[in-house]
Image 1 (cartoon, rainbow, N blue to C red):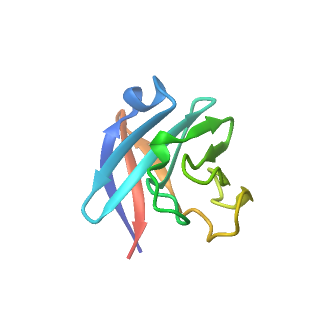
Image 2: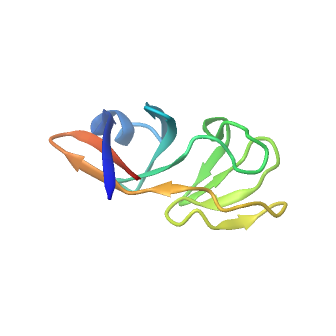
Length: 104
């Protein structure tokens, strides 16, 4: 089962590359790539750095602390020191609002 959280205005996400958002118990980083919105954990699973301070390059986010790179759609690590995958979350846009799904 998925619980959907209304976390942001879609236009605000689409007008920038990255936007931090929160829901009870979760911190997300919303990313806009070619008009599509993705949601990942806001914090790197390796060094606990805020990914919003990192660099978005196409569909890849780089950690500002250890330069680990992750594919934003799958969370798969693409480079840097070995670490767990970056958690990703499903996204829906409904009536101009970004909804992020969290499994129960």
